[in-house]
Length: 212
Image (tube, rainbow, N blue to C red; front, side):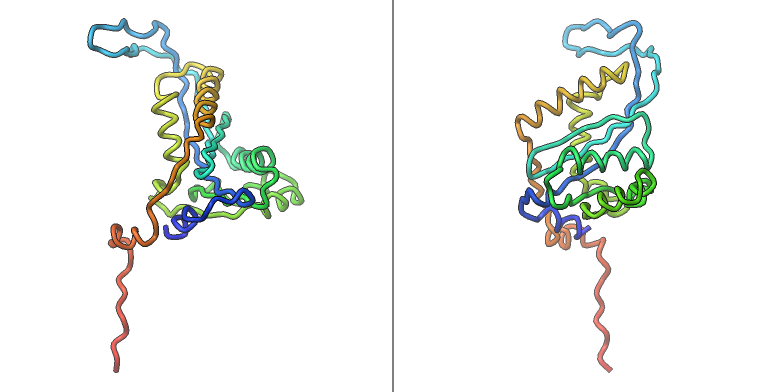
């Protein structure tokens, strides 16, 4: 945990941007009969009848100190999809960065091994050398700023039913554009010294050896 907190405490460095990555699955559902009529003092509601149209995987990356985020959609979430997301971050989003400081959870599809399964060894090695990995501890996904961004995305853009991948992409692109234009930053204030006080139960107790 303290490793992640120390990373968030680093100053902004365009040569070594701190980028958080997370993903979620969005069910695609349409409402054949449309939304229910709006009534006085009641918000618009969705009909309980819906049609399923599969799912989409949503990859979100965010650079907290720059107020910059990107979202990409895939049909699945596999090691190959994650590797391609990393390639996009390195070659498309941050081609001039010396190294990307990456924060992600420890899902089994996450890791340098994904690069070697997706690309030729030379390319995988070249990409891997530009990554500085930091994994959030188990049951500590709240430490990943990308999860906060996914919550905002759901609340502000895609929480309601979405019937198609094109509609989902349109909503997301509009949200990303607006949020990036406003340069919405995440100023992480919780530090390791705070964790030692407020999360004391997570720390093993230090018992000095008894003097003989």
